[in-house]
Amino acid sequence: MGIESIQTADAPQAIGPYSQAVRAGGFVFASGQIPLDPSTMQIVEGDIGRQTERVLENLKAVLSAAGSSLERVVKTTVYLADMGDFAAMNDVYGRYFGAARPARSTVQAARLPRDARIEIDVIALA
Image (cartoon, rainbow, N blue to C red):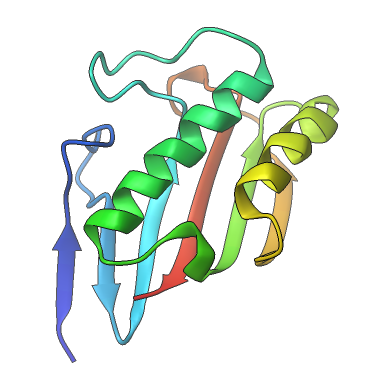
């Protein structure tokens, strides 16, 4: 069983010693994405809804580079800086996943990279 590192210019470059995703054993394990604009590597301005959209667009790009998609996601973990943002995040999240409805955990984190308000990682079928 091989392990393949996935990289794409269509999503923010890793800001540490990790891959945007790894494909192994029929799965894609996507690293957590924060709301960075891939062209500027800066956090997008706007409310949690706008930031959730950016995170999910980044994940779509990474999954596409790995030969997968949001429709093939089986598990997500959502990290929020403030659980008060849950409802607004959930509205956007629901639009992206629709009927697919992967398993999900949502937790409030004391602090996220670059003081982001949201981070999401996913596991998908390759």
